[in-house]
Amino acid sequence: MKEKEFISTIKQILNSEYIGDDCAFLKDLGIVVTQDSLVEDVHFKKDFITPYQLGYKSIMVNLSDISASGAEPKYITISLSLPSDIENNFVEQFYQGCKTACPEDVEIVGGDITSADKIYISVCAIGKTENRNISSRKNAKIGQKVVVSGINGSSGAGLELLLKGETKPEKFIKSHLEPQAQIEFGKYLGENIKEPYAAMDTSDGLMDALSTIANDSGVLLDINFDKIPYDKDIEYFDDWQNLVLFGGEDYQIIATVPQNINIGTTIGEVKQGLGVNLKIGNKEIFYDKKTVENNIYKHFK
Image 1 (cartoon, rainbow, N blue to C red):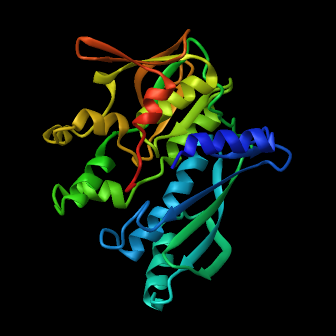
Image 2 (cartoon, rainbow, N blue to C red):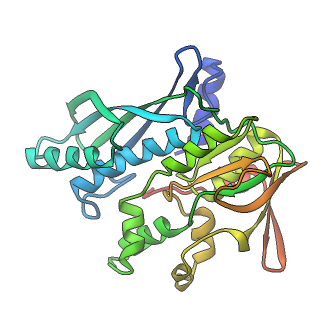
Image 3 (cartoon, rainbow, N blue to C red):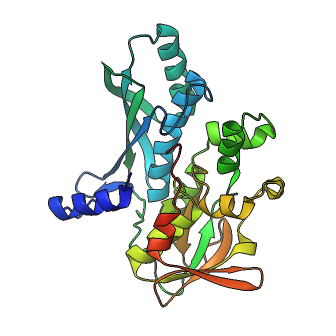
């Protein structure tokens, strides 16, 4: 699917200032709103994931967007479309997973259930912005440093194992099926940064987040691959560097922050220019917007 092209078309038609970031910041209401969908055989396969894990992941991917905005996650609604052969046991386990994924102060408050030919999940999450500085992909400033919340590539490695019918290392498969939204990282950003800053989660891959922030902000992100944190066991994969850069669904947070902010791992700096410049070993590789979009994470399609 030409996701980036479709989003650009929608933005042109609607002409809304809110479209562009993963969360719409509705300042007059003091909230951010996000919505994500998971579709069977596109984002997940029933053979790979339990109903409990599917519910858990459905919530986490939305909490991740709220966290990357710097807001405080508060409320969730879930729309669930199911084939006629789905049993009540699936629904029970799915919602148990959803409930477990919600922190103590996050509540599921409603949604919708309909019939469909496959499983379709659409989750809407609302976050509170009081006393938080909300990020935007457009806010990266020259002189800021680029930080990431945690390790990259593990989820992509897990998906690769699943597609090959392998079960180990189990930690990679768990990273793919049971991701963790970086709620505390996002909280720190929102509560401690006073100037404009950019942040985005790595749902579509580390390089996608870097490129999106760079191009939306009109800056160059100068990145050192050797500084990017990853599980060393991923080096056993033939394409491990590609997994670190382009493997999706790690749900880490990339942010451009002032030099005096001490959080995460610093992997680069914001400089004058446009795009992403990657130092890897003795080489430097420049990634423009088109190159990154041609390599973007595509789930099962």
